[in-house]
Length: 214
Image (cartoon, rainbow, N blue to C red; front, side):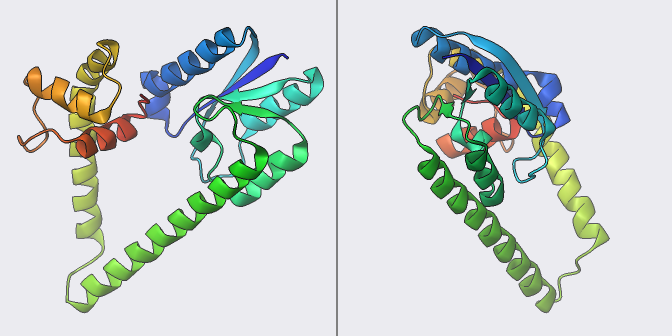
């Protein structure tokens, strides 16, 4: 059963860092080795999961059909973000393996994509409601708010980049949970962005920002 790999990161910065891609590549290669198969080709995409136009995935699916291969991905969320997209994947007739859920079938993928799309819609609605409530209270929205948001994002990105080496060290040391990584960071005197205590949720958010997978 030949395998075709598909890796995806959300931004160019994540692509350049190699962190997300390296973790995904190691995951699919390790799984292929475990089942005694080889990965014939790997396609790499830098694209938001909410967008349906993904040329590298289209190429990967075409390669699967041509070579009668199975698509292998590291995590279901590399695919399951959009119902219409997943429907097209199912219609293509290509089998797939998600390393984090190797027994998942196409129906499960479809259900997960529906939940993911619903979550995006709910977040969008909550954001709109919060902005409307703030405006009703007299909060000035617009350029100043956008500038502040950009500044906060830049600060969060900078702190995440400072911490990423320590998180990778924690993973290399065998830390397999967010709590274990938080404990490792605390024990090595790595500071949080506000100088407070490390929590699993804090670690999860930073790893998500860096596209690092456990």
